[in-house]
Amino acid sequence: MNEEAWTIGRLLSWTADFFGERKIDQPRLAAEVLLAQVLQCQRIELYTRFEEVVSEDMRTEFRGLIKRHAVGEPVAYLVGHREFYSLNFKVNPHVLIPRPETETLVSELLDRLPAKGDKVDWQVCDVGTGSGAIAVCVAKYLPQATVTAIDISSQALTVAQENAQRHGVTERIHFTLGDLLSPVAGQRFDAIVSNPPYISPTELEQVAKSVKDFEPQVALVGAGADGGQTTRQLIDQAADALKPGGWLLFETSPMLAPSLKGYLEQQTQWSQSGVVKDTAGLPRVVWARRQLA
Ligand SMILES: C[S@@+](CC[C@H](N)C(=O)[O-])C[C@H]1O[C@@H](n2cnc3c(N)ncnc32)[C@H](O)[C@@H]1O
Image 1 (cartoon, rainbow, N blue to C red):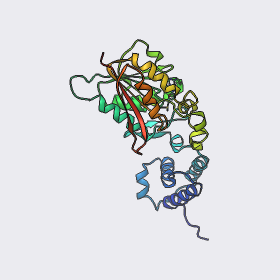
Image 2: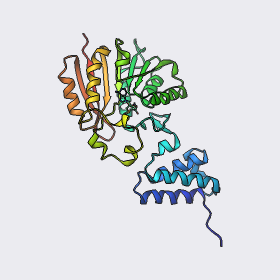
Image 3: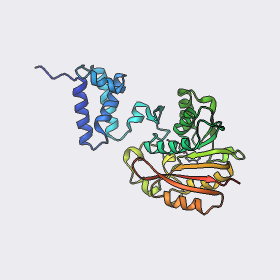
Image 4: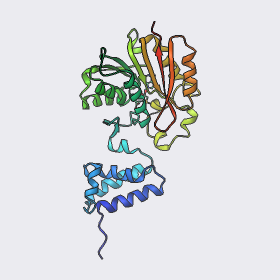
């Protein structure tokens, strides 16, 4: 009997159908990323190798990844990396997988800290750095900026340090273990940026299994019944840690954005504040400027 060979093309169609039947997000993309990982090639290369037969060993390895993804394990953890702001970041289950929403936060920050002009040696603090996605982007795209990257998780800081090394910016990022801005008491920054945990305990029950069961809770769930207390604490600490005219920018949920902007408006230290929508059109980034004097 002449059994049909398991070519790259056939494996991809079979796997995409299998993921699709299980209602897995972006089934074809997941199949391609996982197979490219097993074959140690770029995803794009698969398209020129559709007719190539995949060895039994490789298929066994691929089957293992398919099974893990089918029960919710995120592709980024399975392959160990994720692209963010056109840079490739190492990730593991100690860090949140960087999200496209957070790219809006980075863009808004970079818009406020021009890379050309009289002042370019910006001092930036990234609170809750996780994989270092924000801190590394800031250091990479603002070549004279110095970044302080804080996290409460030492395992996350290890990943962030590896990412700084990967992108050649270790010398301009100081990594610090601690709670919010407490490790940098007395210091003053031009900008404080943060993607703090902001999901409420109730919302956690409703998020996808791939998030709830696999990403670190410390990265997801904010303090307080609404999940916003960690952010309110950050706001309370940030005014004293910013230079006059300095910027605070943070990511939050569309539900919390209006109330957090209201919280900022109640405080006299801030001269302006606003909310920016992400690429999906949802209120996502809240910003405020410290009074000039
Ligand atoms: C939502 S993740 C953001 C990770 C990364 N900045 C990103 O945007 O992909 C939140 C991060 O904040 C850290 N974290 C949680 N509570 C913290 C606290 N009180 N002080 C400092 N970091 C905290 C978590 O360990 C986690 O790495």
